Length: 318
Image 1 (spheres, rainbow, N blue to C red):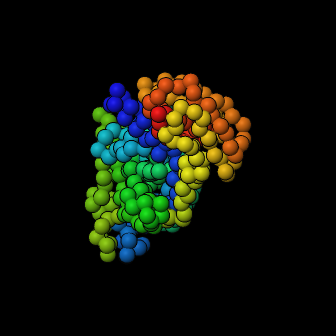
Image 2 (cartoon, helix red, strand yellow):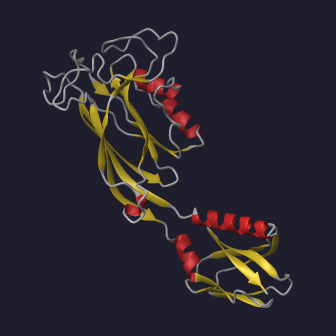
């Protein structure tokens, strides 16, 4: 029985702790350096001339819970990534993300009508879905694109920025989706048979021109931290709704709600997880609850607000 008590009560408190919503606002900035070394001696990497209609497709961004669930290098491209890499169309990728239970948000940023320049997109990210993946087409091209796969924006240090990483920049490189043949900037090519996998084109033609950085990067992505918010609703419920006396000797307990948080119900569960008492309540700063019909023992008292948040605590009846 002691093991059951510990498991049930621990589970309830784990659920409570995970309810608070911690979100952050970032501006994601993609800066393109796509050019020849002649056109840009500092950044240029293309060993062949750029096409006259060189541009970047709309920037597709997804946030998700775990790594490698949206995009994974070294694996066959999904239909959504194939569409982005070959045509710049984001519709299939959007369908994949919205149907993926591991994903949270799908955001479309603008495209870029030139080879060099920047794309900026604001996004709000939840701590439950801290990974960011993104892609945009190198256009025109057979199936070339840039991507960021599963960048985790959580720092692990909750004392700074509520646990979110401060502004930082990463290099990005060209990839081949493995779906079309071709070695130049052309949008009309035959399908790759058999289908290949996503591979890096870093240091490979036509992206192996020498630049001062010697990294052969085609651009950078900067995650500009703006601010973050830790929801205090559940915290206020825990801190300001008091239950006393606890332990109680089988009589009444008092629920003190000095901030008039809009409570919806009080539920009391036994150690087996069975509901033994429920009281639907209206807004009140103080409520007396009679427990004389309950046996001595350990219970779990759960308070719920009208918007669905909850707090739980152990209740002992002597």
